[in-house]
Length: 463
Figure 1: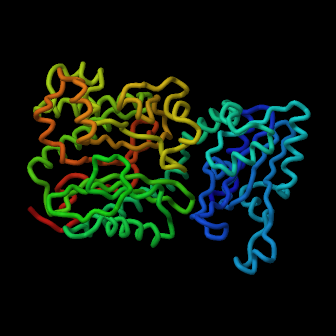
Figure 2: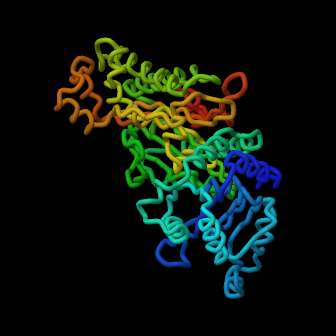
Figure 3: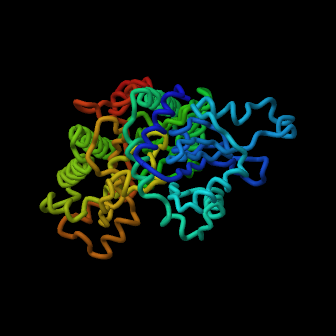
C-alpha cells in the first residue's frame, strides 16, 4: 500500500466531485475453481484498491457524501478459519491502514442502503463485472439483472476515470517496477528459446520470473508461433527452425500495477529474408506512433501514423497499391493491422476497461464501427499522467485474407496474388509502455531488446 494519506486524499476528491448521495464501492470475493476452499488467485477490484488500498476479499466500501461517513463493511475470520489460516488482522485493523476509522459487519450494509433509499438519496455504484457482485447489488438495491448497467452511476464512472487516468509520481514508480520485471520476462524467453522446445516451456520460464519476484502476471501469457492470432493462449506447439515466436506478457506488482510488453523473435538464431523485411516494417510503424506522442495530441493521431506507415510499407513490398491515404481512410490496411495501437494501463493492464472504453478511451464520444478502427481502445487527447502501451503489429490472417478476397473487398488497394504468398507468415508485434509528461513523453522502465541486433546480444549470437 501507499501511505494512508494517498487514499484519504483520493476519497476526498471523489467525495467533492460526486457532491451528494451514497457511493458503493464493492471489493471482490474469492473465486472458487471447483469448490469453495479451492480458489483461484485472489484479485481485488481495482477501483476498490485505488480508493481504499485494502487487498482482502469480501469487503464493501461506502462513502456517505452528505453525512461525511466512510465505512468498510466486512466480517472478521472465526476461530474455525484461523485454525486453517493462522492469526489474521481484524477488519478494523485492515481498514485503518487505508485511513478508514469505521468498520461494520456485512449484515449492517443493507440497513445503511435501505435507509438512504427511503430518504430518496442517490445511490452511486459502478457497473459490476463479477457475478457475485451483481447478486449483491440486485439484493441491496432490489434491481433486476438487466437493470444493473443502466442504473450504474455515469457520474461515478466519469469521476473515477478522471482520477485514475492521471497517474501520480508514486504510481509511475510502481508501474515502472512492473515494466522492469516484464522486461526480465521477455529477456528470459529470448535466452531460453530453441528449436524443439514447446510454447509451454517458454511460458513456464516467463511465469517463473514473476513468481520468483513474489509477483503475479498482469494477464494470461501469450506465447505462440501463431502470432497472427491476436490473443492466442494455446501453448501446445513444438517450436521449429524458421518459426517466428510472439510473446505478449507482463508482470503485476504486489500493489497490482501492471506492465505489458510484446516481443517477436526467431526461434532459430536469425530472421529469414522475408521475416526481416516485415520485421523492419513493424518497427518503423512502432516508431511512427511514438513520434506523435505529446501532451495535447489525440492518441488517435499516433494510431493513424502507425496505419499509414504500415500501408506505405505494404505498397513498397507490393502487397498494396493505389492511393495510400484513401486506402487507410477506407480501412483496407486493416487486412494487416486489424486492431488498435495501444490502451491505457495502470491498476489494470487494460486500465478501467470494466468502466467502458467509450469513457476511458474516448471521453464519451462514439467509437468508429469500421473494421480495425473499432478495436482501438484509446483515441482521446493525451494528458500528463496518462500511461499507455504502443503496440502496432503486422498480421497475416489466412481466414481474413480469404474472406475479403472472396467478397471482392478493396481490390483497388490490395494485390491479392502477392498477399497470398504471405498466408503462412504469422504475425509480428512489439510493445512498449509510455507516460505523458508535462513537456513530452517518457518510455517506462528499462529498455526491452527490440531490434534484431539487440535481440542477438541477449541471445549471445553474433551474425
